[in-house]
Every structure is written in C-alpha cells, then in structure tokens.
Amino acid sequence: MKIIISGICGFAGSTLAKALKERIAGAKIFGFDNFIRPGSEINRQGLKSMGIGVMHGDVRSVTDVEALPAADWVIDAAANPSVLAGSAPGSSSRQVVEHNLLGTVNLLEYCKARKAGFVLPSTSRVYAIEPLAELKVRVKDKAFVPDMKRKLPPGITAKGVSEQFSTAAPVSLYGSTKLASEALALEYGATFDFPVWINRCGVLAGAGQFGRADQGIFSFWINSWLRRRPLKYLGFGGRGYQVRDCLHPADLAPLLIKQMKSGSLGQQPRTVNISGGMERSMSLAQLSEWCADRFGPHKVMADGSERRFDIPWMVLDSKLGRKTWGWEPEVSLESILDEIARHAESHPNWLEMSVP
Image (cartoon, rainbow, N blue to C red):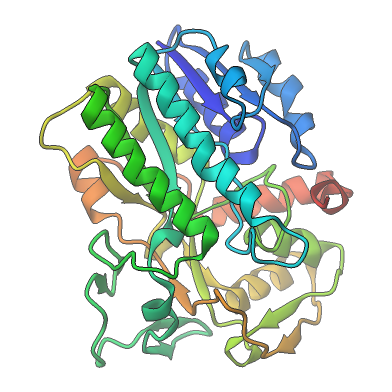
C-alpha cells in the first residue's frame, strides 16, 4: 500500500505517519510539507529514519500536488487548525481558505486523476457555535457538564455531540473551510468513483504537539505550567470550567487502516465522529489540578473576557464510529498527559519553538 500524507511534518501528520508505518507491513509512506509552521522542520529527520519519505511542497500549489508520485491513498493532514485563524488580528482569512479548502481541492483533483482513495481528518469545530455557546450546563467537579434536566439541542446527549448536531453557520472560518472540504470530498468521491472517509476528531493531543493556546491547549497548558509562564482562565467567569475531550493521533491509525482496507463499502456512513469521549475529557481547572500534582503550585489568573468562538463544553459522541468500525481509543487520558509532561521536561525550549 502506498500512502501520501499532506502536512506530514505537523503533529498529526507525523504521528500518523509513524503509527501507520509501524502497523502496516510493507507500506510505502511518504508525504510533503511546506514547513512554514514553526517547529515542523524538526520532525523531518525522525520520519526519514523510519524510512518515511518527506518532500518539500505546498498543498496550495497545483503543480506541487500534480508532481506527487502515484499512491493508493491520500490523507489530508495539512491545515491551519486554529478556530481563530483568519479572524484574529494579523491573520489572513484568504490564507485559511487557501490552506484548508483550496488545498483539499488540489488533493481531490489528484485522487480523481490517480483513482486514489481520500481520508480527511476533520474537526469537532464544524458544529454550530451558537447552540453550543448557549448550551445549558451545570458544574460538576470543577467542570461543565450538560444539564440533562434542561432541554438540550438535537444531537446532544450526556455522551457528547453526535453527527446529527447542527453545522449551521457560524462555525468559524476554520470550521467552515473544513465543512466545505467535507462536502467537496464526498462529491468528488461520488462523481469520480473513488473512496472517501471523513473523521471528525476531537482535540488531538500528545508528545511533540506544538504548544499554542489556540491549537494545542493541553500541550500549551502543561508546558506553560512547568515553566511558570502566565496562564489565564478566559471567559465563563474566569473559573476554567470549560471542557474539551482529547485523542492521541496514534489512535487514528487502526481506524484509518480499516477504512483504507475496506475500499468503498456501499452503505457505510462516510462521516463519523472520532474522539476520546467523556472518558478522555477534562476542564482547564481539572488540568490545572493535574499540573499542580505533577509540577507544584502555579497561579492562574481569572479573566472573564468573552471571546467570539468560545464554547463551554465540547465532547464528541463517537458511538457511530465505534459501531461502524469496531474502533476504540487505546491511549488513556492519563497516558496522554504524562506523555506531554515528559516531553515538556526534556524539551525546555519547546514553547519558544512553537511561536511564529
């Protein structure tokens, strides 16, 4: 099997490449990256040492994508993954669209020409912000949970947000480019007869993730706590009760292998949630308690300032993905946090490497 991974030197792309190489006997895995993200260059040698090919190329460039060698599958791991991308001061909205949507179109054109299958790791941020922001929650153990005694929006249960939840705008520029990419991928696959699988992921987390508050909150928080950097609880009263689930990207590998080996099955759902679920979710306040136990005390400032895209609770319900593929995450929440912490302890300049 020959697999191309775009954004192969990012956290998700590099972790997936290594996990797939270890699990698929005889697989030829190669990928490309434009290396514009700080820190991505350091992953090149580790990949090459495992026999994984790495090329310089930009997913936004038609000629770069057309020049790629033949492959059986394409995994689209190149994206600007910040919900603030394109709307924060100094960021380019056009660049978000070019990276996250037009780049996907270029890869779909490649799949069309080469009859390669396509896998899109998508995001929980395709789900509508307004009903999530207005979600009725209560506090349990320093964390928000949905108030099951109140009327909840369709698609939300105590297990999380399902695929039936609204994807109506606004979902952020990031979320909308990923949602549009999903729709185009399904259309290309149906029109030009190649298999497409879409996996909406929760927050990806693990060792080697670049520590940015808008992209890798677990890594950012742990690295910042260890270095005694300033930290703030933003919004929601400044208490840190907002909750996210997390998933180690290596846990995607067994699922992707099943999807790629299945080819194109007629009645299988093409789009599923894939996440750590309630068992791998926590609030910032709970993460702070974990950090205090591990590294000692550190003061976190309270800042109740509201931000446009903030939501109190986001945990994906992966029931459909588990039922369809028999998939279960393997890496526990404690293992993910411990892995990040050990990496932070051995890389004292990691935060400096992660900023532009």
